[in-house]
Every structure is written in structure tokens, then in C-alpha cells.
Length: 273
Image: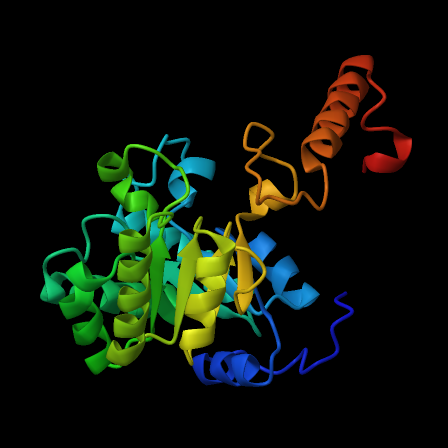
């Protein structure tokens, strides 16, 4: 169980996220894509669970987040929403379901909330998606923004490198963050940007920032759960801290199972009817 005793059983809401920032309490967020993992995270005291479009990579084996569909995201989010009792569940709107068409964004977000039980959506971008953000917020849908490295735009960027290192891009990011706040976003993810810039943005905003590869000046942090528990051994960016080596645990357990089955040791007399 979690050692964090601060309101550990109190339901996390968008309003509570703002309160946590005001009192200087960091927000913890991890991705999850199924009922079992979401339940375990919830019991451990995680504040927010992101049903990320990273499911495209870690669950479906795609090279980018672009191929995943809205139907697939809703399926993943259904299990997570059932497993999370305390945590706020946020679901990514996948590529092609909100860009350039506010009404399509609204239809997509309504489907996510109604069909999955998730409580908020996350969308990537700044000024270029302002109309979609505004439409969702006016419809009563909580929106989390996402700036910096936005993986759905990887074919434009051409690289997963650090963003906003130059002053012009950094200033645009600041402007976009302030705009997202003004439009009504309840939080914003800052991905793979210089730590000093992330701190500046966090200090300017009254809404929480949640960083991934953006330093410790953000109001919270998020990681992909398969990465932080050591399942994805081929992914080792500078910002990733591994809290376990589950790949070895699983490999050893499966090897032992295979050996026991082949030797006839499993099941034994106590494991049969």
C-alpha cells in the first residue's frame, strides 16, 4: 500500500488537481490500459491514470501512436475506468479524432466519456487546436492539454528529440500553455522540453503541469507503466527511472513454469482434484 497518507482515499477530481497545485502537493500519474493494472495502481495511491495512446506501442506493437483508433482507445479505457475508484481517469483522443474539426472532437470526446467511463480527455497541441479545446470545455468535458514533444506529430517533427530548445519555439510553448489555461484546460502535460522552460511554464500557470522528460519543476510527473516497471527493456531515455525489473521476473517465472510442465512436476498432488 502507499505510504502517502494525504487524502489517500479521497476521490481525485479536476478541482482537487488544482487544489493540490495550490498547496504544493505533487501529482502522480501513470499510464494504464486494463482493469487489473488500474486496480493495483489505484490501491497504491496514484492520483491520475492516463489511458494513453501509447497503447498503440506497448499494447498493439505499432511503431508510433498514429495507428490506434478511437474504438481501441475506448476499449482500453473501459477496463481502466472500472478498476480506478480514487484516481482521475484521463483518456487520450487519438490522432485524427479532433484535429481541425471541433465537432468531430466533440463527438469523439462524448463517445469516450459515455462509452468508457473515463472522466477527462487529453489532446495534443496549442493554438492550432484552440477551437477544439474551446468546444469541448464549453460542452462540459474536462480537457488536459499536451505540449512540447507531441508524439502524434512525429511525422512532422521527424525525431523524438527534445523540443523548444530554441527561444522562438520556447516562447510559442509558453504562449500555447497560457492559451490552453485561458480556454479552460484543467492541466497540461509538458513532454521532453528543457527543465528550466518547464519550470517557467509551471510558475506562470495556475493549472497543474505534469512532466515527462521535463524536469522536477513541474507540478506532477507521468510515465508509461511498462517503462517504469522494466517491461520495455529496449526503451532507456534519460528521463526514465525504472522502479522494478519485471521483465526478468516474468521471464524467470515462465521458464520455471515451462520446465515444471515438461517435467510433469506441475500440477502436483496438491494442485489437482
